[in-house]
Length: 503
Image (cartoon, rainbow, N blue to C red; front, top):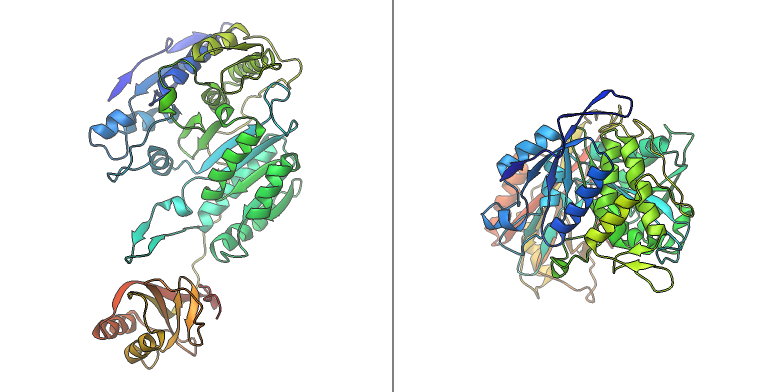
């Protein structure tokens, strides 16, 4: 259901008398505390002179309840594709029932590949152990484990596929460097776990190094994600812009926001080539709904990012400085209120009014902002990724995954699998949860009912799809339940798979 409304006329007169066209945006008030914090944000946008024309859509719980598994109706997609700018309050996603995350659906459907989360401390007005923290996390938004490809494969084992693509990686890494350049940042850091996930995270690291070479004026560095996260939590001021794959970025951007002061005061931008979405990073907090206590700051700062994106830096500057002045004056909602620091505890709408009352003012202790026109280009940098040159691909083997109940005799299983092998496709190993258990397995290794059986040509010569089909027929003839296959391929002679642990 879409309710088209307009906050102001289609055109307005600027201070110099020139006519300015209002930018159409789509607004959703969401669930839980969403309607309250959106109302507060819209009031400040209007008071600051935002040149916007609003179309409202309904998303979330009520839409899920009408049978839309993604929490959004077709008419709402039409609005988003028309305005290309989405200011979204948080929603509540029902549990179970096959429903999908609206956030993930929106990001992937509209190609919003870059999630931008500034994490800034506001010491001494908001409690933090890191008073000089000012970093930005750039998170890949479309792939990784969030591709959402999961399967239950056996009684005991479930699978989630981690997908990392070269184009997706290059796009987000290049965006991070372009963001750093445009915002006068000095350094871009990459976090990944390529000491374990050598192909997926290995690709992310490799592409980072390739793109970094194109930006010699910017410092670059790489950290393994675990020690990098520890360093960020302990010494966040050592970082400037951090780029990460989807899951890492999702987790660590919340950590960064919390150690800066509060998840409740962090905004988020989701940027794509054609569209953009702006929101708070927190959820709908239904237990706080309707009480006029929620902190609207996260959505407000998301709205500031939106104003920069639609090239209204003058309004963004007024809004952001007024918000900073309010924080500096100790006008705080309950979540960040602290005796001796805060001056007044206020509700959601009262906080909004305090920001409105300070429009035109600047903070004196906190650093005032001054946004410039076209600081962030609408969408992607001019060059996003280099088209991949197809490699010479050869299939030289296959991993066959089985559901075999435990406990089982691994040697007896190997006999059956060897009976199924082809002359050019012998059994090489059996693993369980990635750990080699045959040949020469250890009795101490724990087994589940999920087995990987690798058949590989000894000479590295090509095999055919027909060979694989014949092999599977042989496996079936041995009474074994195969549940999945993965072809083992070389690309220009480089192997495209990892060895089993312990092999």
